[in-house]
Image 1 (cartoon, one colour):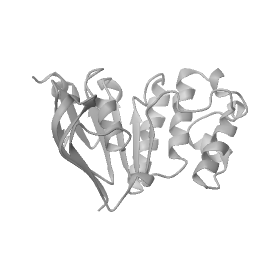
Image 2 (cartoon, helix red, strand yellow; image 1 turned 90 degrees about the horizontal axis):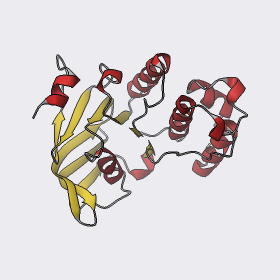
Image 3 (tube, helix red, strand yellow; image 1 turned 60 degrees about the horizontal axis):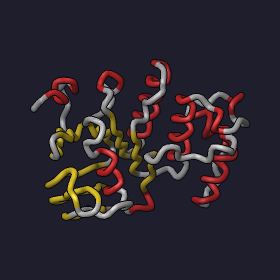
Image 4 (tube, one colour; image 1 turned 135 degrees about the vertical axis):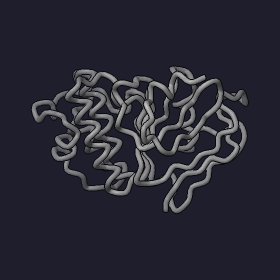
Length: 218
């Protein structure tokens, strides 16, 4: 089974760890939530697993997969603001060497057809989040990393996002989402990685677990 493993991993910048001694495994067919307060190291962990920054120590191992099978919406905005939504999809598709129909991709992300030709900078906050998700899905990654994807979404948007992520998981992929907004993510992930006080604890089974209780543990 394709997976990403971290062994004795410490992450941070300029050799200064933010989170230390991380041991975890991310498997396909799962939605995994990175849960922690702002500044706890969620985004840094994502970038380290993606190979974008070097770990302070330890290692990341890719089993039956590689960096080319990963995609992310982390650095916001991750789209071209002065291009239309349609043109954004065309550019990203060309980068990956793929033939993707922009209209279908945008529709699947919940972006109204009337907005396809508008510049992305003029989208609402929620629509920008949907566009970032749309572009991250273009290469059909095996591992999809999303940083606070529910930001700016109304209740219908959150429901639509949850359905999209579950559908993508059910196709045999792994979705990794970071959040600190508990009420908006409860019931979505299959497992959780709690980042708190410089440590990361993997909770592989959330059956009967309330994320709010987990978040408040000391």
